Length: 110
Length: 113
Image 1: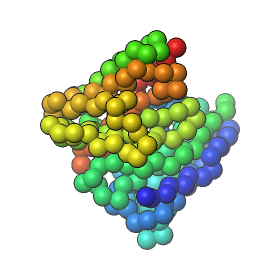
Image 2: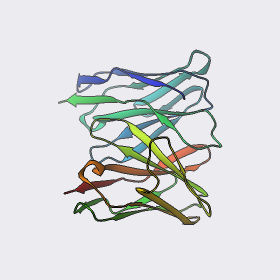
Image 3: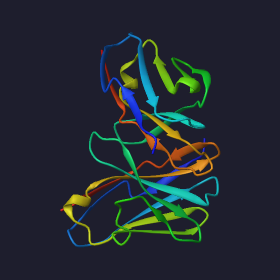
């Protein structure tokens, strides 16, 4: 099956700092999503981004499908963005099931 | 986005009893739903694919007699953990896809004592 590697595993920032999270995947995919898991466990959809670049507020993401990686950028971090960020990929969207990376735990300190 | 609702959010049960977790798609129909399991500080691991009106498909290593899945309608899938033991304690999350995105329930934290 597809292997998904996320880096770094842990990231500690001061409020206001920027960060870049990376997701590498071992095979071509036609579906890639970024999620934020809040402290209560809820997975929040951030981006559906199998290729290209998208932005939403202080968050942006870029996927280079030909090189099998995706990046999530968080600018001017607030403490509220602390949590675990997951990348999930699917080789066949019609099949539905996703493979998750191990996540990046982001801690933003005031 | 689409809303997937799970119930209960948390449950504590005694060893040897069974627990049922419900997963509902509130504003869409889902012929397929997915059940994941997450241990503390770990990633989500797919357990099974729930298919409306037919048998679930289990991932390798997942005991289908231990984790019973029923997908009786287009908006409801249930996961029953039978004869639960402390090692079954975990966070269980369901998912459904509104093409092409996957949406997740809020999860159920199961503690078996």
